[in-house]
Amino acid sequence: MLTCHNRKAKTLDSLSHLCKFDERFEIYIVDDNSTDGTTEAIALQFPQVHLIKGSGNLYWNRGMHTAWEQAAKQDYDFYLWLNDDVVLYENCFDELMACSGIRNHQAIISGIVEGRETKETLYGGTDTKKQLIVPDGEMHPITNLNGNVVLVPRDVYLRLGNLDPVYHHDLGDVDYGLRAKEHHISVYTTRIAVASGDKNDVCRVRLSDVTMRSRFKRLYSPLGSNPAILFYFRRKHYGLINAAGYCLFLFIINVLPDTIVTFLFGERYN
Image (cartoon, rainbow, N blue to C red):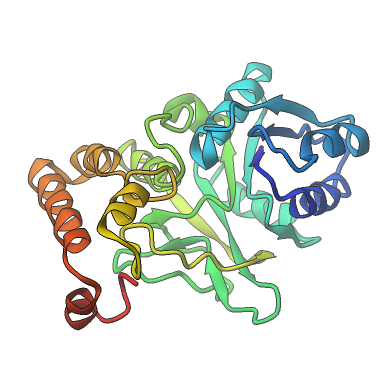
């Protein structure tokens, strides 16, 4: 399952690699109202793909929710989340399925993604100390799940259901991993890297070098950190006090000028 918007080359490249693996796979992709010809190109080059038209306002989480909603009608044995900027390695599915088998297909398996050139670990998940988990030949439990390459067995889906559509762009993957833990479902990394991709290092909570009005406009946008959605997420998993405190912090750092934020936090929020 994938969702895409206006990056035709990356989407087609991802589908090209995915279609080489196994014809038994069924691919569901939401094109969120692209204007660069993505829809037409997918329909022409990959007619076997289940292509779903989005409104243009779905972004990642709601796009993936829509794709999964359609795929789940067929009651598959496994569901795979995939970002369209990720290129899978040849051993990807062997590793994902092997790791799932080790956990008796009762756990979520997150594939580790490394940089295309640097081979630096980029995604997969973080541990209890919020440190990115680096592959070392062993499976490791994840606290915060990254949704770039994720295998969800049918039994897990039947217990947890779909991604929460309250989340617009981000946080849906982290929420799903935390929901799993709350239901006593394990979340693990693969033992090795299974794909390559690009690092997305955008700060969502604050823009620098812009007016305060522009800063808050971005904060409340789908690509920002909408305080209402963050409050929902933090209250759900960490409690009311944590949620209220963090939303107050968001307001304060977006009101403070760049110089003071840099003095207090360095480059963290720039």
